[in-house]
Amino acid sequence: MVRTTTAAMAENSEVRPEVVITVSDEGPLEAVGAAARACALSNGFEAERATRLQVVVEELIREALSRGESPIASGDIVTTITFDGMTLEVAVVDHRLPLTPAQARHLPSRRLVSLGFVNKLHVGFAGADGNIATCAMTLDTEDADDVIHAELLTPDAPDAEEGEIAAIDVRLMTPEDADNLVQCIFRCYGYSYPNQSMLKPKTIRRQLATGAMVSVVAVTETGEVVGHVAYSFERPGDTIPESGKMIVDPRYRGHHLAERLSLKRAAIAAERGISGTWSEAVTNHPASQRVAIQRGAAEVGLLVGASPASFKMDALPEKGDVRQSLIAVFTPAGPLEPASISIPSYATAHLGAICDRLSVERTMSDLVLEPTHRRSRLHTSASAATGVLEIRVGEIGRDLVDQVMGVFDEYLALQPSTMHLHLPACDPSAAWAARELERLSFAWCAWIPEFLPSGDSLLLQRVTDHPVHIEPIVCARSEGEEVRDFVIDQWDRVRRGTSVGNQLG
Image (cartoon, rainbow, N blue to C red; front, side, top):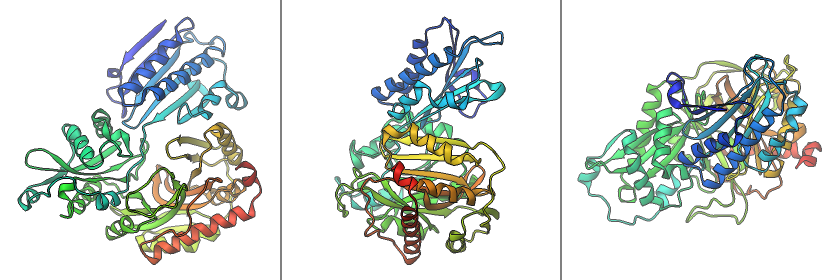
């Protein structure tokens, strides 16, 4: 039997489920897979990806059914499908024989995620909550650079008159603006805009409704959208959003519209109690770095090889089929509370200088303290488009290295080019974890204040043997060069000093 409940059930939840399905032993698992596929298609995912999600969901139901009869009155399997505007997540819960960690690692569904069928899969036993399997698939979120495209694209229509420019209203975006925004993006980029989700009005409206994206638009007297900028949250619960999605109609460039949009975005962030935003600036041209610095940003890290070789920018120097690096910058939008963090001893002076630039108070400890927890809590996701695998550590445990190696096994078939790992810097064991993870070739990447729900992120990176562009990485000022040199020095040090990482590469 299959029972389906619509999204109206969850009026008070932060992200309402699309569908809730209850399946009994005799129920057709194909019905659940078909529902997941339909939800994916309706929210803008390509048909092939929607079908891959269907396959994974059906396998998760099959695995739940194989765990024997439930000792409780209802042995039904409950599947919940949610979409927050960017990520479609399917959770499958059963109360059957508890899974052991070893069993969870060897489930057939692991093979599907390693082949790239979904971006994330986690299966495990959660005590009284039962066995919980969660898979997720994220829309293509590759953002164009915040400034470079606006400077380089050639206008394809007559420039606007001064009177038209003076009448433009820069305001918070509403759902009714979504169709006009898509038209603005088309005027700027045609169908080549890297973030394909921004060409789907329904997806834009959903992101606005859930708060995954907060947008500012420039609107003419006739209601035409001629400019846009936003900040976006990667995941529900995040407190520090990424800024980007800067778009200016070619007819209106050169009239400081980008600055007006950015100022309005900053004001909205401050009104909503957001303490800052972060962004990634290209390193083959310093323009976007300069604009961020003028807004009060500081360079906080270097993401080596984070930009895929396929991402090209007209009129900018390229280095053939190699991955590009990105400068991570942080822009305060309000006061940052003082905090105590744990970081490796080699980074205290480096991070102290960055804190001074941002006027942020941090008490740093470089004590190497072993975790009190036995098991770590990890959240993983991967993007086939960028080749980046991300691991967020919610809780540091003594098994951290083993769990991260397990993630390598899960995503082996994807052959990720770069791995980013967020450590909770407020955890007293963060310095210990950073040292231990050097055994897997993870090196210092960046520090992002208040990025995690628990506080600051100590971001580590592991770059595999895909070709990476290192020389020259262009920085807008000497402070950026100091950050660049420090990160590259640490990357070189870890690569020279480890053998385990080379074996895993």
